[in-house]
Image 1: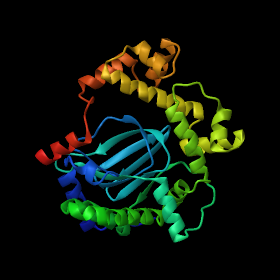
Image 2 (image 1 turned 30 degrees about the vertical axis):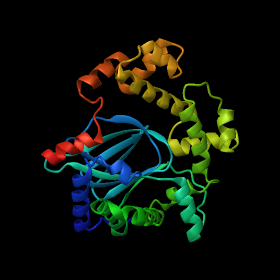
Image 3 (image 1 turned 135 degrees about the horizontal axis):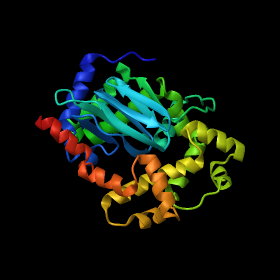
Image 4 (image 1 turned 45 degrees about the vertical axis):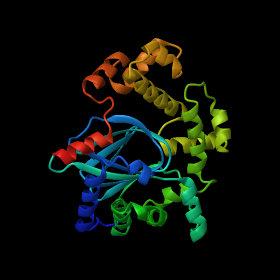
Length: 314
């Protein structure tokens, strides 16, 4: 495992994140990059992640996939190589030392291109989960810092950004979790095969599903599909679909524009009682109480940019 990065590199990364987290032009200048900050620990939030790399510069965060917990702190990074429904929360943050992190979306096509250009050998087919945490080496932190420095000279971005993103991918591919990256870029890897069925589930979560159809989308036998889907996502296809349905329902409830029965029906539940029962089992409260609690706690509409603004004003 890589050693913890040099303190000077982390300090510069902290400074860059704090400086630019509220920059409204960031999505246009660096469309694959997300800066995150918070001055307080946060409540667990359910979300469905796409393939992503997240490096923590200060503080600590926790991601939970079913019954597996992944804690990562300053100088460490998280990789998620397939769409996963997780619960995430900041566990270490304060006014004086806020949580600061940078994320980069992982594009299979970019990884595939790098694999072809470098002649990187294929990896053995694996049944590892599609999520992992490792220490960040200096060789990885350095290009991440240089990427954020581009915000100081926006005219350099079109010329230098592609090569820096490529370097970050290469460092990840050469590091402890390189297996996950390479599987993401290989069309015939188990990760990519299961990823195809997951994409279908996310787009058709409200529809009845046949496991045989998902196995066909993945290009696997039924037995192999069951085994690899559970290994990568830590749940069965039907459990995965239920997670997606309930998270979509929670998002709809928070808008307050539809009644609970209508929302339950739209996400795939035919029985309001079943919807309410499974929602409470997932989130701890019935739908109506949960949405009211979140709104009263001002969690609706809270964005990363707003959190970062509090950092700069503190």
